[in-house]
Image (cartoon, rainbow, N blue to C red; front, side, top):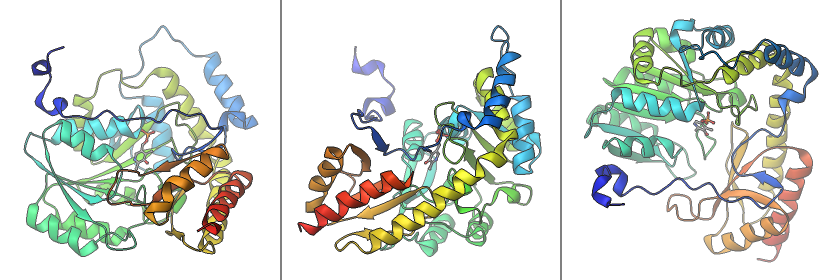
Length: 359
Ligand SMILES: *Cc1c(COP(=O)(O)O)cnc(C)c1O
């Protein structure tokens, strides 16, 4: 293949690497440990959806039934919601709707990779405001940057992946008021925080876009379903850009079925939150390890950089795969650990204690 065939932005593009998995305890991608289809009432609902399923018919372009179910869950009108193949697809569609080459996109750093990847592919200019020590967002720095740069889009990940930190809704309102451009608030983990969501503010701020996903708290990462909520004028424009049949009808039907039975899933979420607090507290007592407070289903921890290889390998030997940030200068010696069940967390902890004792 001739490199000249490629778009300029693609030529210098590194592929998103999904690590090969050999371990049986995989806690590197913030997946839910629970199979929600195994819950009897959800299984029943899913089976009923399957028995009337018609694979020969094209899916509803705007996922009408799913939109109704999401509307019932979020309190937004169906016309204020748009669903797709995971939050990732909705990030991509939103960028494609609004960004011209050379536009400025503002991020805090470190954060989720997809904003920079997507914006970079479109030739946008990415500006970053680094977190303060302790991975607290630089709130003043972000507001100053919004006022100074007036970016076309500002991304706020709340709570943030990978640091777990939560911004208050009132701070986000300050950003919304200061920004002439769009503010995209990624609430992929908001079900674990259960407060400070700005989703109800889409009627007050026409420049607000909120992202949610069923991949994390709802345990449907493989089914692929994410959605944005925004002023209907924004939804109408993003709907023009998306592929007409982006979201397959099986996902539309099954995601709606799960949402109708969401009360059955919240206890699993509550258990993960309690387990997160237990693990966080236990890690605080391990000398040489810093653990950051988290409002999500994961914990960011940090050790001296020269201990990181040994620790990562020790976990692998113990059949545990965690997320490591090896070549990220903003996250030296850092690991992200998905919180799952007590037995897995105890295994994580025992390896951590053992390695740190050797220090
Ligand atoms: C997981 C995640 C998403 C979306 O994931 P999908 O599986 O594509 O829905 C979006 N933002 C953040 C910060 C995430 O961690």
